[in-house]
Amino acid sequence: MTSFFLSARTGSAALPRVVGLAALAVGLLGLLPGCSKQDYPIAVPTPAKITVPQRALSPEGIQYDETNKRFIVSSRTQGRIGTVRDDSTYTQLADDPRLVSTIGLNLDGTRQRLLAAVSDIGVNTARSTATTLRKLAALAIFNPSSGALLSYVDLGALRPTLPHIAVDTQGNAYITDSLSPIIYKVDAQGVATVFLENPQLSGGTGFGLNGIVFHPDGYLLTAKTSDGTLYKVPLANPTGFTTVTTTQSLVGADGLLLLDNNTLLVVAGSQNTVFRMASTNAWATTAPTGSFATGAVSATTIARRNGTEAFVLYPYTATSPRFAITKAVF
Image (tube, rainbow, N blue to C red; front, side):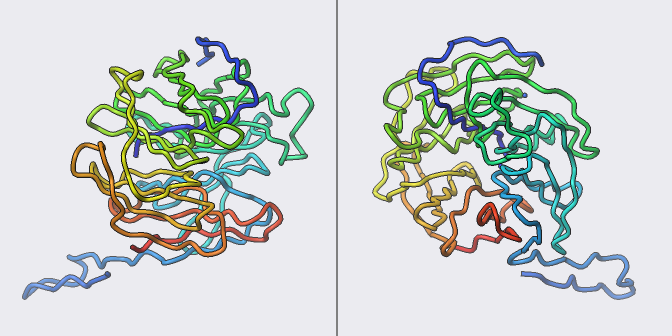
């Protein structure tokens, strides 16, 4: 929901700079003479759309688990984390009383971790309390196979809500804050620091930074929801961040997916569109090379499947009897 990045929405502009953490075309293969059909597997097509009959789940984050051939989704309204098969079967994977709302997800397959951002924006009336409302911020880490809780990192002092997450090759998580102009860093040992803070990253009265991805050449790409600005942030020199020049409006940018080093997918929810953006100069500039219309639904984020396919999450409304996962075709 690939690298794992986290977007955080907080109601406080004055936050501590350093925080300690507790623990973040389908084809049939031709047969050679003398060979049986069992010698060659048949390619299985991926569905164009999976509609899931789960009322009021309102998933925000999505990842695809290649090992177990299933999607993993969060839930803003119920907190629990579940899996979705191609046949639309939903199964609960993980839950805990502290999971008021789960937002962004990141499947760190290298380290066998599923990272989930936990917050409370008041949409889960069963678990929300005066103590947690707009104050809860945490990172829950699970075993992606069993759903067992491995660690729960309390970020309450930062007071954000957390939509997106990303992890670099060293296991560091980078977290954007949508209501304060901040990117946090949580290292593999659970130590949290302010990675970058700059007024230029502010969204004003709207959401600021939201989606964020790690580029293997050593920098982050992150987008501002309010005006669609795309930024390039070097890991070695975050204060030297630059604006990626583009003529395409990316207003409403939410989830990001780095499809390859030169291709970025941007879910612009308010434009009901996923934009495919390309760069030939290490993301100094970018231009659109395609788009996918999501229809009258505010899609949130996007996940990679089978290496090159991308699936968009349609959460629908909090009271909807279903949500959908749709293949983006450009």
